[in-house]
Image (cartoon, rainbow, N blue to C red; front, top):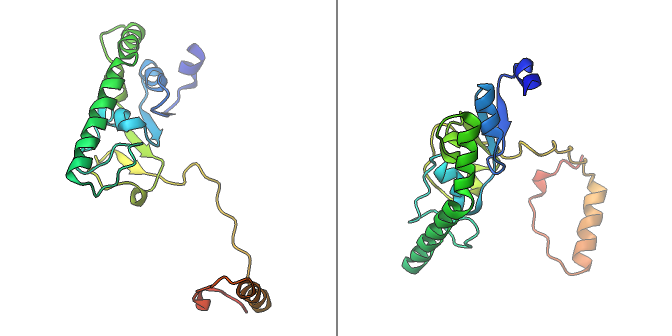
Length: 184
């Protein structure tokens, strides 16, 4: 711990699914940022990040529902929401709260400590998620953890013609706008 304090870090970046990153940031007295994708039932985001997930139109993660739910599917989604809320409250939450209180030397909870995150970097694209309200400290950073793509190879006219002939000869219909290719 002394070595970390002497290093004088400016910020800590952690994943919200694995606890203790925020505890380390509190002990070092530095701000912390979460790089997070999602959690089952959006429990961590709701309880710790205070992100709204209205069950009337935002399906619970892992529920296989869409954002266009019938009345019965909305009831099913609400039951999933209640299940995950109950599961989180009973899944070692008391032990984590006690551990955090002892480590920080004051009464606190896991959710309260996690809620102090300066920024939530959500590792997906906003257009791949269901529409939902967001807070100002939430940013979508899809592709942050991916390697940069290599450029596509140039397509020659002869290789494109060969490909089209092979595709048609085996019975596959190819529909494309050839203007997309640079076949010079």
